[in-house]
Length: 113
Image 1 (cartoon, rainbow, N blue to C red):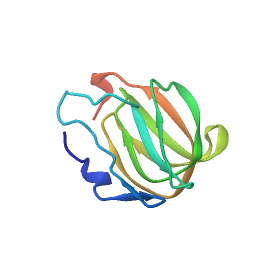
Image 2: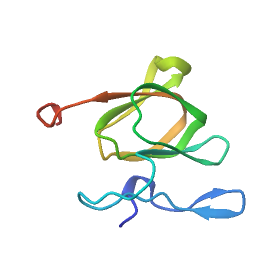
Image 3: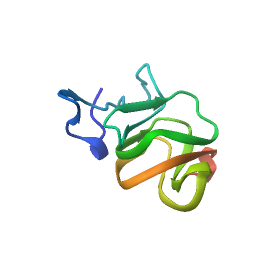
Image 4: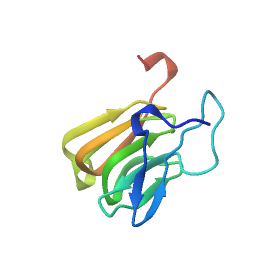
């Protein structure tokens, strides 16, 4: 396993340092498919998300998308308003200032860039 380059570094939740990890290659770590650090400084995770999902705790900072779907992050609840970022399957990064919801859209290998 390795730390995803987009989220490398420590994220502090209270006084306990946490790392967000993404498995290398095709191996997958047990746990949530989509992870992010909330505005509440807690790590949140979603397993098998579909459609539009609210970001509990308000998404902020480090995000990893280990789903087989494209994740479009929106500033407003209900996947409304302008998109803040779009993460392809396996993508991740630092998101600022925040996001309130995520739409997961399945894409085939032929549709991937």
